[in-house]
Figure 1 (tube, rainbow, N blue to C red):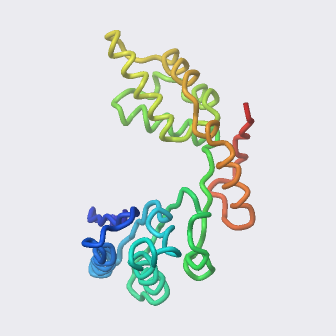
Figure 2: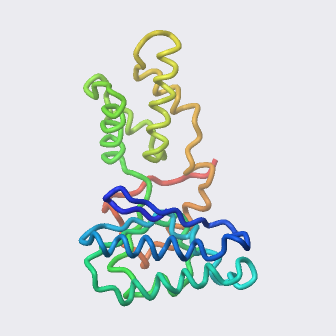
Length: 222
C-alpha cells in the first residue's frame, strides 16, 4: 500500500499478477508518484515494502517481469527525484528486501522499531483507553505496562477491546482485573515468534538505528 498524507492511497498488489492484469501494478506506482509530485511538499508512506518487491528477483518467471520493472522504476525515482516528497517506508522482514534497495543513498536513515519498553507501553495504554472513550485515570497504566512486558501496541489494544467485551457481557465497565485476565490468557507474538524477532534484532545491530535508547524487553524461550 502506498499512501499520501492527503488521504489518497494506491494499492500495489504483492501476489502474482494474472496475465490480463500485468502492467496494472506499474500504472499504480506511476500514478502514486505523479500524484505525490503534484501535491508536494508531502509525505509518501509505503507500508510493508517487502510484500511489494520481495519477488522482484524472480519476476521474469512469475509475472512476466512486471515486478522487476516496477522495482526499477521506484529505484530510479528515489535516486533522481527533485520534488519535495519525503518518503517513509516500513518493512516487517527486511531480509526479504532486495539488497540494492537498502544501500546507502536510497534512504536518509534506517530505524529499527523494537518491542515497546515499560514507559512506551504505559503511554500506549493511555492512548488506547482514551481512544475507546474511557478515562485513563481510572486505570493504573504503570502497573498494566509492567504486566505486559512482551506485548506490542496492537496487542495492547486487542487486550483492551477483549476486556470491553467481557465488561459489556456483564453490563459493567472493564476493570484492571479483566485486563489482567486477558493479558495472562493471551500469547504475544514475541513469544510465539521469538526466533524471528531475535533474528531481526541481530540483523539490526550495526545496520539500523534504534527508535528508542531504552533497554528492550528480553524474550525468554518457554
